Length: 249
Length: 387
Image (cartoon, rainbow over all chains, first blue to last red; front, side, top):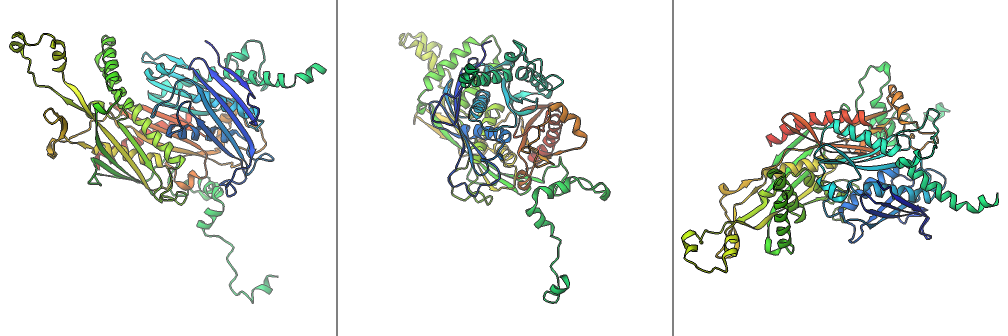
């Protein structure tokens, strides 16, 4: 299976940006983060002691509709929880994330937004990292479909997702917490548990953190999991950013 | 010092606050004190509103409240009240730009999947028509002055829009409404009977004639499902979905047919001819929120424990999962969970499950929530059957 492709800091006007492409589902997302910025007319924010996280999703060919409002709400609640909005310089300010869907099939009115959700989550997280927004943890997300015969399919294409009996999106944090679950279709709890197990192994890999809390960095194991992929993408960017420093040593 | 002030103010102001003021000044501590009473006091752990953690508010439903709609319902869950009206309008197939293409592709599908089984293709076609032609148009309005945060007459807020989407996508994913109920057919009279054709009239129109004698779809009913939240005290989705469900169960469509002479759709004004929708199942939504005992857990500069460690520490309960949260509780919690269940022959089927906004609710808790939702299903079925 072809893994996702991601790169950081592609836009130079935004504080941080990331592009993410998932070949299996065909979606390609460009994300930009500006943080911390002054939000106009947010003096009387509901929670003045924290930063306000704002998320905007722009579909490829149309204007944003009700579906985008819904997915923005989900992204805001997931990212808002892991952004450390009380760090110095962040209270009363805004963290504004804009995600543009630049490739992949359109999500029609009333369609399920689950197929594109993992790509949006990954692009959002990488853009946050690129903008150096303080986060309490990272996460990785995956889409799983259960077919009529009961097989669990990873990253089904939009047509396969339409034919699936149930669709599940899981986001698992770097510490194995279940951060997000969105499931729809018809299923029972035992199926859900199986899918969850599968999601955990996709996101965290077979070998999770060892007893002392360190992530084992053996070759090959890191890239097998999605969290390893996120880690490698950031490592590559850090390596190229500090190349001048490494050369001088 | 105190003795010097008493002559001026003979009755010293009381230093204790009434509970309502304490609730406003220290909302988190107020709810926490209710949920974890001191062990010496021997009080049970109840929420500030007097409910147990998995107890829902008193729910009532009334169908057929609006006379000018095809179906309507008022559902009240505690202080949250939703009014839903369903209006049916006719969509002519000649007004659908892509109708001929759609029909051709669906026929192709039928040919292709003949071996798969009839019911399956029927379901697929159902989904296609309702979804592709937007035959269900739900809208939810919060701009009614339902809560202080929502100004009347304002454009739909992000919450209202996302609730509209949730209702629409749940209607689609549960396939609650059958496309068959929404179709208006035309059965041409059988003019080209055997002897008529044998007379040798018009050999060239033969193929057209035989196609024309099949019955065809002339129009669709489009259901406009409008929900107004007239009072919002937390948990708008459960109330809105219950009102949509009750209104659809109440909806009656008049008998409609294609009149070939007038070339238009005619509807019977005889109430006895009108028929109800036959819905698929009865999906019931139950929402929950997770209240964390330690308000600073999310941002204090401590390392967040691993999922496994967190599980082991569960003995000292640090969070409560509250069913059907009211507005006060929703303001104090970030993590939400929502489960939509249906029952088929006594077996619970999950139709939708979501949780986001935190990391304290995991699979063990979700299993319990599904059980709670299944019990709620029985209760809601009773309420909806009575209305």
